Image (cartoon, rainbow, N blue to C red):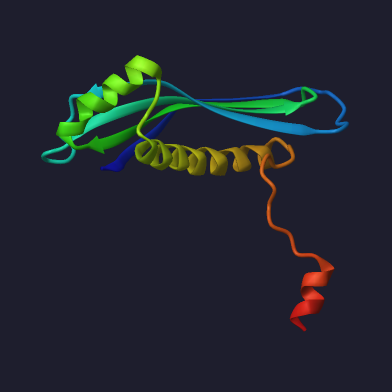
Length: 140
């Protein structure tokens, strides 16, 4: 089972003119729906389409970034119905599949969000690695 496709269908960034005080950034990933696609992308595999929404919210109301899109996932035909039933019944996904799909979404959307944040002069929503003076002294 593997990810075989990804597409963003909507990107929305809204920057508001509010002074920055103590800035807090929250993000939320929501799996909206899952469905079987009638595609024969990989022989002997079913294709599942995971529709998602990923939101990044700066507070106090500095900005919001929102992504909508989907991930295409190749599934073993024997497990496809079980995966779909689990999602429809209680909105859960097998932990192995969920980890793979969510990490892929986070990677793609966070990279795009960092690009947009730079363009709109917003602070990064993720803490980026930084070198400190102590680190440089230790290496010498």
